[in-house]
Image (cartoon, rainbow, N blue to C red; front, side):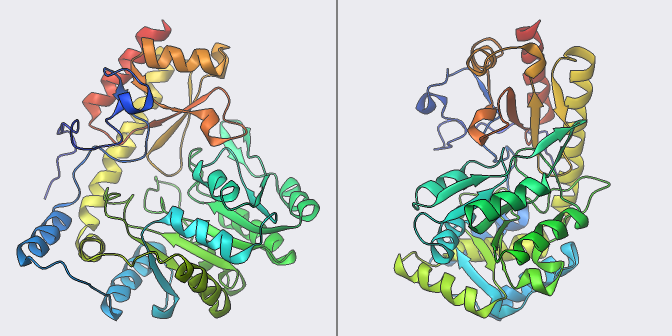
Length: 388
């Protein structure tokens, strides 16, 4: 089957957060390319599973058995060469919820949590809202590619007595897919200083040619022993409204601590639509994903080519993973406010401000490329007119 990613679907008046500019103070006529959900329908296998469950007509209480974890085992072994055990699995309504719970489970108020900015902004709120202290190891942009300052990473851990590290891999928004050497160096530092790792790997299925996603916990049994691995089918198959995340903790003691924290809040288990959607996606959605990745790669290449030919002052930091384009506008010499005003009111685009992602985001914007190519081309032309 060939899937149509060029089809334009009207998402206005559908309760879509992405397509509600007025709620966020944006003009009605902007093209929304900000939040990370895709303008493509979910795979037919997912829609069929939801329809079948709907036609069944009963929506009571549901639970999963080993067949559910078996589906996950097959996916992660086949796609990421990572073997998981049934007992490791804890199901939650979302990865962000899992990060909050893990921070509360493994730290006390005022203890330190380290992150690598610029990074997905809910990491910051997960630290601040739980009363923990934020420590930043800023990524360094060198020759168009972000690198980790390992010396600073270790010194920050020592000086701030860091207890938890929240790893983002593939990295949102800068698009890095960290190598085995980089991940092992991070892991060795965390092992030396007894730091627990919360690995947000939700973008793990969006990897471009020449790169490979390596599950942090799968690199070494010692790393598995200190890691909470956060995954979900929601980004991969564009089903974020179906709140399901699969969290894996191999260390029995950490898993118990996490589960006890989870129990305090009475957060419900995932529902039947989440269960059937996750199973259908992982069992039957691989061909859809393969075609999607090819389409997204072409979208990213079209941005790169357009900017080089028409707006050379704006640089795409070419991503190794994710469908998010991290754009460097610093050569234009604009303040962040002026940059945002120009993009919003002249280019008529709704992008995500780089400063949202913390230190190092000044002068950058994040653009979601997961849309029909005609929409992306229209957005690029509007960007060109605004800055020319």
